[in-house]
Length: 327
Ligand SMILES: Cc1cc2nc3c(=O)[nH]c(=O)nc-3n(C[C@H](O)[C@H](O)[C@H](O)COP(=O)(O)OP(=O)(O)OC[C@H]3O[C@@H](n4cnc5c(N)ncnc54)[C@H](O)[C@@H]3O)c2cc1C
Ligand SMILES: NC(=O)C1=CC=CN([C@@H]2O[C@H](COP(=O)(O)OP(=O)(O)OC[C@H]3O[C@@H](n4cnc5c(N)ncnc54)[C@H](OP(=O)(O)O)[C@@H]3O)[C@@H](O)[C@H]2O)C1
Image (cartoon, rainbow, N blue to C red; front, top):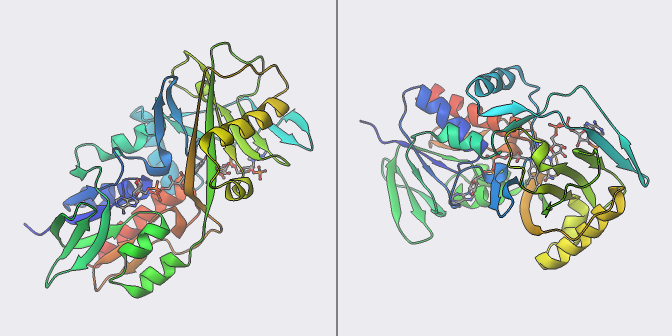
């Protein structure tokens, strides 16, 4: 038995790579600092049920991704979401329907990565701090000082600031990861016991501290006990208010929401705020994945491509492809 392949990160990119390697007969072992999988496709369990705080939906423009999404749909992992879409611009809220197919995980966004993970071996709550090369194999060191290994190869599938540190054994890869600037996003959720009197289910915004809002229960399979809304601030607003206390962020964004939604908005029965420090790359790249095939060290993530769920999946596939072709 050869040593397994270590994958650091159980977001869409890491699990895409894991699936491709597992399908090719390779053993993998996954690590994530969080308590569960999903990364930026996480759903937060709350008094109002599970709320999608990160990725809201995804589109499938690449043929390979579109095919795999159809398989996920057949297995019940995802469903189409066709919200009543609006656009808010120059102070006006107007319907903005389109023909785009948008997908969501069911019954929550994080269900997709849970399903992809299946029974693959995983270590949650395990923050990897160092990836080191032994004589013939790779080892990992975690934040508790524990060592893991041996591994034949390592795939780093984290956002670029963490990836840069973990790729130190391959300075060129580390430098590329370090060159990627990421933008933050403040996300807030509000739950109302009485449904708001509006037809809006999803809204793109301009000229506002907000860039997006969604009625969580308009997505298929969601709990409906409260009328729960998720709001995302723009990158610019989030950057300017990066260190604001959560209560102040909630107050500001509640004000922006109440001002634009065009109906009475009572005090919420429930609210929460989450800061995504590394939400999205400032620009897209065409790297696919990063590889030092001779060393056996790889990196993947949305930041290697489009900064979207589709980009993360494609990047994971590319890391796995490059690793397999070099075996
Ligand atoms: C607010 C927000 C809204 C978004 N909306 C959309 C949308 O509507 N549509 C869309 O297509 N995309 C959207 N995105 C982008 C999408 O979520 C990402 O492109 C995608 O989920 C990235 O996947 P990933 O696997 O590359 O990275 P991540 O999901 O970030 O996964 C990386 C994983 O690595 C783990 N990790 C990090 N460091 C370590 C370490 N040292 N040790 C162990 N584990 C570690 C993390 O815990 C995480 O689980 C949104 C993102 C955000 C933040
Ligand atoms: N907040 C974050 O941190 C994010 C990180 C990464 C991605 N984010 C959002 O993900 C959405 C995914 O993009 P895509 O898969 O290309 O979805 P589309 O629905 O196609 O949206 C792209 C873009 O187009 C505009 N738009 C689309 N449909 C409409 C419509 N019916 N009416 C008005 N505008 C529409 C909109 O861009 P604007 O600049 O015009 O607001 C969409 O953003 C995407 O929403 C990312 O923002 C968030």
